[in-house]
Amino acid sequence: MRTAEQSTSAGGAEERPGCPKRMVFGPCGGVRDDGGCEVAPHPCVFLGSPLPRWTDPTPPAPPPVAGGLLDRAGTGPVVLTDLTVHPFDPASVRAVVAALAPVSDGLLVGEHQNRPDLPPTLMAQEVLAAGGRPWTTLACRDRNRVVLEQELAGLAAVGVDGVLCVTGDGRGPGVRAGVSSAFDLDGTRLAALAAAAGLTAAVPESPDAPPVPLRPQRVAEKERAGARLCVLNHVAGPARLAAFTAAARAAGATLPFLASVAVYTDERSARVLQAFPGLHLDDAAVERVLAAPDPVAAGIAAAVREARALLAVPGVVGVNLSGLASDGGPAAAAAVKAEVATMIREDA
Image (cartoon, rainbow, N blue to C red; front, side, top):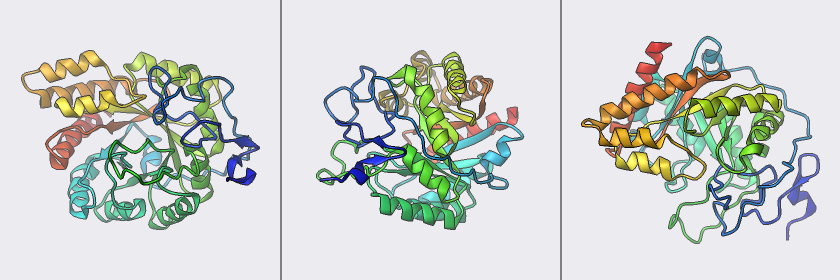
């Protein structure tokens, strides 16, 4: 049985009964369009008001890393590119970083629900050694608080540009079946720990995941916890993004936003993004790309158009090139993302 100390945090806020991720500051970004929980067969327990509020003091903001993504965002749009590599393969990391680092302001090292990989600190070391600036995703799913604190200390020691603090998706079907999940913390509480460790904390938000009206306030609460950057999940277009960022500002958020750009060039890379809970793509644009005589060229052009439109939204300082990009493997995916990033940077 958990004690009161284990279930209560941040000014008396408590775990919401029925949340399988044991979240205090929910909901997560994976709420399904019908309001269903991503993990359990019932509605998300955070659908109704009020949202839990962060009432602890906000940790001091560390200065942006000199020459890093946030530093560069002060002078023009930045590009944060997802790193897609073969798992447990340092050579793959080095090859992909070599392709992407010259055209990216940061590389987002993910934590995938269906593909376990090297520990975050080791991945960050590999990216740094290959010449990249890592933004390392740290998820609460598979780590208790002690291990999360160890990883934060390690990431601070190796010198990452920032940490994307996430609660974590439910583990993919059939992936390490029978292995328990931890969820000692959620992404908001992890952001506070990251900031206290002297790291620049980024957080995600899903504008179009239920409960949609409460999502802007979540950004403000995460900023109060210590977040200094918000990476927004995919939305169907710039008008929806602008409405969300304006609502977040009205709720008190002042941090900068990165907008996710969908990068796909074939059936698999498109459908994986479309199927993910909480994400909304321009479905008509997807079908145009897939029906094009040259889907690779069409997908690159579509991603560049989307990036240009999203960068025009107030408060958006850059884009996150997100997605598998290609079913042809990490090298092909890196080539696609590098081309997209190059074209975006040429506009800057």
